[in-house]
Image (cartoon, rainbow, N blue to C red; front, side, top):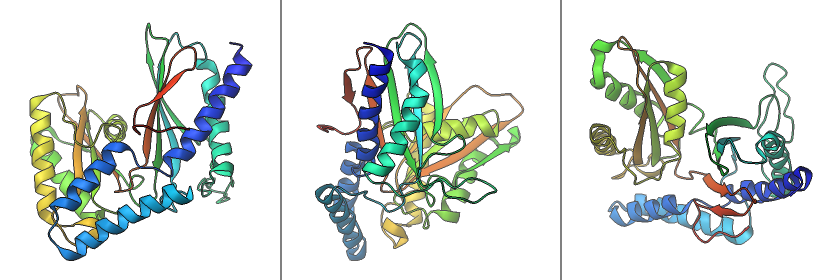
Length: 299
């Protein structure tokens, strides 16, 4: 396949998929909200969960975004070094964002810093943001589309702790962040936590944690234990759906980590709201693709 033809094909698919992510929650998030609703015994909380369900049904039926704030569009790309169209991807994803904004349509959310001018296209300086992981000896490409809303994912926080604060300090930081803005972030939240050596590495890992399935666990037993303890503790705060009280403050807690300098503990928190709009699509080298995040989805 010629590269120009491939770029057109990729742009067409990613335009449709980006728009689709804005209108349909991923399968795991839908299942988790249904589970939390069934567990709830507070009448007001049940009403809120029902309104969430009705909102998603209306979005699908009317082919409209499920939240008015489609956020800042971000792409997290895990691409094989042998994927034949890796050089075309940056231009493809920028064009796909512009076209999805016009065709879906999606609200205009890209404002140039300092000039304060809305571009009207959801593109701008370094927007859409693209984060890259290159995989040696692979010819496939996986792309996570994320719509980072202004009230939930974007107000993240990061800090470098002194080693004496230990993992208790990590827990305290997470609780301080979630309880300070959890209501405004449209709970129940998916909480992504990065534990690393500095603010920038922890922040990146906290965002990557949001792409794991809601009910997944970290493969390291101690990290998985911390995820469960944090989830249970945050739920006991009783924030509930939309901050109106209830059994669940969070959908889940996902931790991603790296090795770190012995004298620092970098920690960061990113959150996704109940309308956690993310999607994963995987391309083979012939540009056949599979949608992973939305079971049975068709573009």
